[in-house]
Image: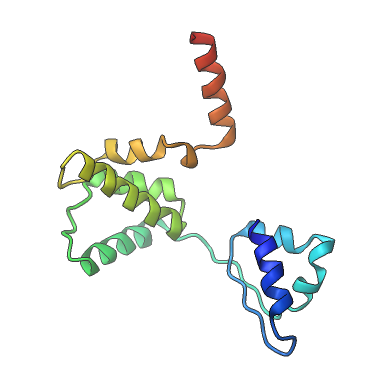
Length: 144
């Protein structure tokens, strides 16, 4: 669906302008399809961003907490470690996991995010792999 929107945007885009695309690695796969040759032929530069290491990821979280005027102890140490490990160096995943964990803590009216809050977020369907969800469904049918 996103590629369909991209194609529509591309068709309206002036031919003499540069096109800058930012996306995940899957975008390269879709651009390699023969139907997207015209779009791919207009790319003049591309780069792959390497994942951040755990220390850089933690510095990012602390900087974001400071920018939002929240204390750096908003996440306890085990929650911080779990988030950085689970995000695997991806800033978007880190940010989403932090926000989801903050929501979980707020739902419980807690001021500090713990590992259980992070784990509750990671148990949500959109964080789990397709294979894990299938196994869970099969297991629940056996019990029922």
